[in-house]
Amino acid sequence: MVNKRTTDKRGIHGKKIPMTKNGAEKLRTELEKLKGEDRPRVINAIAEAREHGDLKENAEYHAAREEQGFIEGRIKEIEFKLANVQIIDVANLPREGKVVFGTTVELEDLDSGEAMTYTIVGEDEASIKDGLLSNTSPIARALMGKEEGETVDVTVPGGSKTLEIVAVHYE
Image (cartoon, rainbow, N blue to C red; front, top):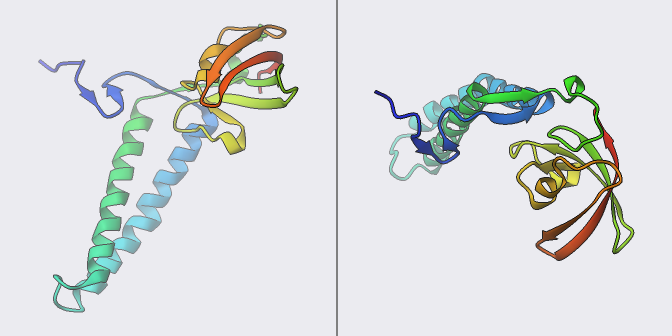
């Protein structure tokens, strides 16, 4: 009998990984590139380096083997994530004005007056510079389930902030 509570570096096997449609598509595109371009290129580089003779002191060979290891590891990681993905299409969610996974939230820092906009996404999609906030971040956790007009107090690495939810968009 298989123990369904076996763990790996991502958590418990069988647990769905939440992701937006865009995030899943980006992973599929990366997987295609890794399998169709990067893997064949590095295999050729290894073959070419082998032709140069002594592998013990062949830096090109060792670099190519290291890159091959990275590529194969990333392929396995992406395949695991895609096999366990739960795609959440925000366009199909009820538009109740609540902050949920996939919504875009306009916020105002009530202390500084700074306006900010974030889309709440899965950990693999998160990119603060692109306005994509991980659903496991302190700010996202504080916002989840809240509605337009509400304020939340959140502790972030730089201290404490009071944020007002100006608008919630289901894009």
